Length: 509
Image (cartoon, rainbow, N blue to C red; front, top):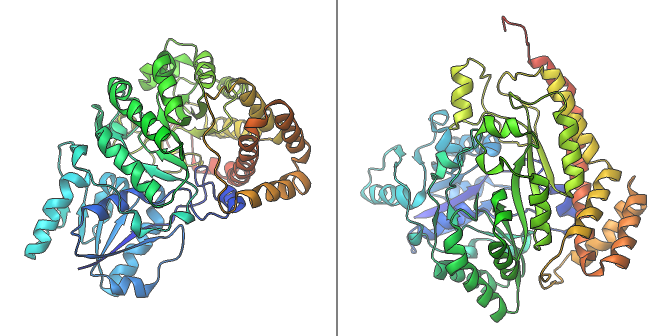
């Protein structure tokens, strides 16, 4: 059997880092971890190839070679996924689809030959068994949650790691919280499930053996869902392995704000090599947390929590949302003030969206306010429900936030504020990788000479060399990130005002 695994194109968005990748000569941020894991579940004797369309284009010859094309995608990759499926149908190649997009929206893809939904540990084996018998069904689903101790190591041999800025690992699934706007509990449940420490170390060893050095992203939606196991077993094992291997990696992940309440957990994460965490701050307005069921963010000083995490040696990246029903007109200024004071350099601000499978989507539908489906782009101006605030005020305020926080002056101020606050236990071993020295010179040319931000670039450049020389590589990294964020912001600004015409706030709408 010949299997071609295809990962559709990911458009230029906040998280694509496409403009930053050009500085280091990489083609994509991360490899397609889901497909690589699925490849590890397929029979060893089958021929397997993988095409990541974010690295290179997909040819008709490759499609014609395959007996089956396996496709996995997220919502934001819908357009590219549809194009791949159409090409397969035209060439008469059978398709097998799974992943978040197809699990949430499988009714939208009747043209796919086989839909293998949910967690592959549960639904892929019966599909493969039926395929061997010659009677595979159209749809496979399972209401249970998978035991991750059966999940294999991803089949890294199918990719060239040199094409990517970072590698990725999944340690756990599920989140103990159930925010109204989030679909994680619908996809993975509220009880955190995780791999064993032995599995995790084996995955780290597999990447080490393939010569990877540098960043690894733990893709878990809430890495600290099971704090006890982390502190008792997993992080101590990671610390031992990292010391034995002379610290070849550094890690980043996603966590909830209650990480700030556990000094020992933060210390262990820093000692294990974690340097960054993405946290859903959402809003500094307490009533909006109450509205959305974001219980972990309530009744706390969010700014103090962020500072606590930074001082523990973990950079905080933040997610922010405007458009809650309870948001006051002052929310835009409050968001700007919080982001600037927190020193959160990577601040992803988005309009609230009702994602299929969430409680918010259900509520908007019941209230007759649902206008369409979510695109999966966290920062796109694509309101898919009727907001309480007038759309022109909401969109205008949102654009003001982006234009303000990603102006060179404010952005570079946040970088310096972070570098003053950030207290890394130890910096990960810096590995000179192909393209990184060139990236420094590119940053000098495009940001320090040609760029409109050159005054702020040189201020950061010399400030970090004089005041925090150990953090100089991080300062340049954030300067490059800023270039990407401004490019994305310019794109959003260009389309922002036109979006208002799609919303009619009149009672008869």
